[in-house]
Length: 492
Image (tube, rainbow, N blue to C red; front, top):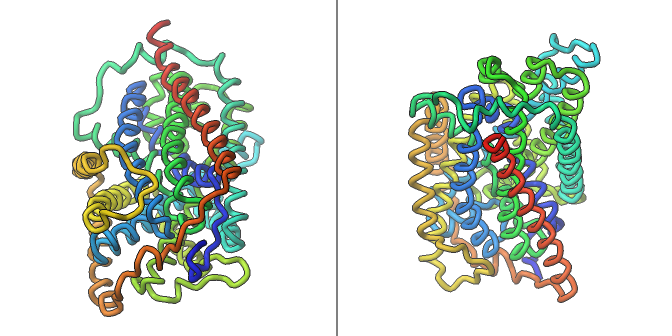
């Protein structure tokens, strides 16, 4: 039986949790600045993408353990509140909100770019329309969708994801005959950028994985979270790799090396790369439909839903104004928090720069994950007897490994974006010192905050296990295929 005080509804299952997570991750990073790095490193992109996967797996498992034990709205904020203190919790909350809203804002701009290219294939010129106007209209649509309820939002998310996969598979099959294996240059380019630049590129490719814990932030709205959340995290991170690896393979195999400078500077590298290679018409139309109405929309939706839950939880704790913890009596959604996310979105969209938004987002999420790892170790110390339905293998070592790697990566991040994140950090600390500290109350017990988690019936558990096994088998097969196709250029 759930905590009687909670006003949010547990409506998300495994497929919705996976869809929300993948939707947040697969979108603006892959289809803009992430794949644009092919213009700098060519087929070496798969090595960077695989390394990005490796440094994302352990954090996923760590978050799987914390989310199964503490399935609350607000994710890292709640973990840091208990494992560290409210100062760290506030920092995590502020950075997560900025970063995930940034993903959504960047996605709306990416949608606008691909949307205009799509219409250009039908002879309709929208180049005179400011991309920011299209992006803001899209944000308003998703604000309404998220206002209407998490169940509706979750169903829409699943639809967007499966539409994207359907278009992607159709596009892959259509484009296979047009692949040039010689474009892979065996396995690498003749030379790679200097180390500093390579680490900056690595950060942008790793950004294609950030948001891998999105489902955790909606833990209070997840059915049987002690099972659903760890499973969703384990599946999602590999499916993200599959999407990245497959799309990057096709871009490398379709675009000649002479157009790499264009890719490196492109706002919509897939569409612009195909145009440069002379693959206009149906290939671009199908691609843009899949990216814009599948990939992009599936990112914008959780890009509003997830940070709104952070704002809601922080407002409940008086870490933000209590106005933001209001829940709509009919739709059971934190509608004032959703509106706040919309306002932040519009501010970021106004910058018009996806690269700047990407850099700010990846820095803030890296900081959030570092705090999450520290919180994990704090929870182990402060709550040694807490019920942990799932335990991450090598959790403590994984935390230190992740912290060191992410700090090293941040050293090479964009300096302007680092300064922006520094401003966010200082603002969060000042706000805590001036407004939050005087409201700090005793942290409720885990039972008071979460209640007793309901266990599924044997029939429901069997159904859940079967669904998970299907996802797991499909993910393993897809991962093998995504890795295997990179061997083909070497063999032939």
